[in-house]
Length: 344
Length: 271
Image (cartoon, rainbow over all chains, first blue to last red; front, side):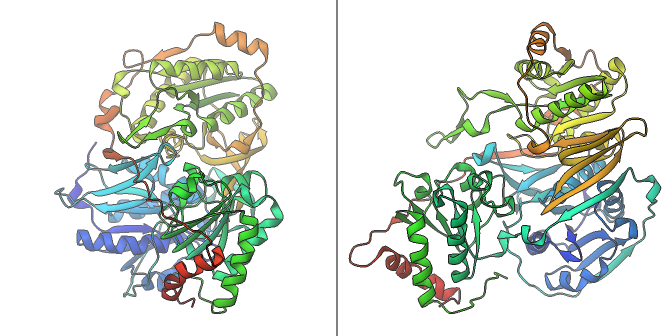
């Protein structure tokens, strides 16, 4: 199984969207994709399908996309694996990109495996670093990913088949504006509702539940040491004061104190804010996997032996429940009111 | 109803530790278990058998010791167990694994009849790829339902199943035509203790070994050489240096922290 590699060109980023809005990870990947395209000497392109996606062009051009390939159809109004897969496949097989990046969201992970199998190519899941191997003649993509619960990192490449595909963790790369002129490429692909083996009977989504932690440059995270559900407020208060957001460890989600959408770690979101405050978090390896690339880590824990102190820039031995309000007070007195909270 | 559950034996990832001196994983003494998500896939298939009749087949690929995982599946109520075990499979990535499983599935269909529902765990806890189930569904050309949290309805007469699955920030309920592939979240069901008759049956039953001599497997499609992805290198993530432990001294400890953060907060435009 090998493909004629020279036929494939350009870096493509899958644009995931929900209710008319582009998912932030897609913009993060455009920014990273721009750099990869520069390294290889090719174009960075966006691609998507849906009922109404042409309207994304403007935003995509702000984030550096030179081309936008898309298919529109009312049948693609809601995500369903099979019609999405078949129409995306049409674009990929027609234009043959050499790299495809997809956000490692629930949807991204659902579509990536079936696409790669149809394309008979390699797929690397949940990548946290992407580099070009300049030593290889074909400038292969090197995809680094954690395995064994974050204990081991593996660098994967895909030498003989194209496209090289990867799903990438949200929050690993930053989305940076880089306006360019965009060329829109609309394609038609015929779909028949009665041939689709799947009907959506119900969809339940709550906006408040959906938090993109990767969006914030300050994160105040709490672990079991915050003691009870009501103390989530202590995290939220400090986060508000610092112009950031709050998050939790897996334990806190398991206790039912906070929704999964706030979870940082191996099985939650990966974040790398400028400031990460870990309050009452012991620092299990699975949690560290999701936050240890933060620039400054502040650990507050009663146990001086807690592993979180091993990765902390600044450590405070003490009770998070007492220290959090003190921090809220002192920062509240000295900080500008209403600081920017987005790291674009 | 004929269910085919794909399972994987994995090292208990929570117990794997790192030796920073040698830069390797310490796997001695780490128990091998059925991938936790897969146990919920088995349970779902057994529940359907209990209600609608039929059989549950289980299929795995791995070294001879993976028989233990299949025996466990039998004790949970599965009826037939198969292990793809051959050195030609060594080093397979998810593309090559889904090919081998596809061949294994053909063999099981030959022996036990057409499969109505293929089941798998959402992902394995060692590789975390979530690609093998979707890959097999694609090779079988059947609809795929990942991250299932509830079986709402099964209607064999009209050939469909209604499944609730997780999506970002919520859930959706899908009506899917059979046969299909469903991958399980842990919320899909609660695991039961194996009833004594199933435990006895598991001890008595044997696992059927599948390899390149008794299947139609094409050795050029599997194993390390045929896998499109290769491992360039592996490394232990670098340990972050331990920083400064703050002491309160004359000032309060929070004042000390504020002093340390002042330059960064200025740079961030917060001061």
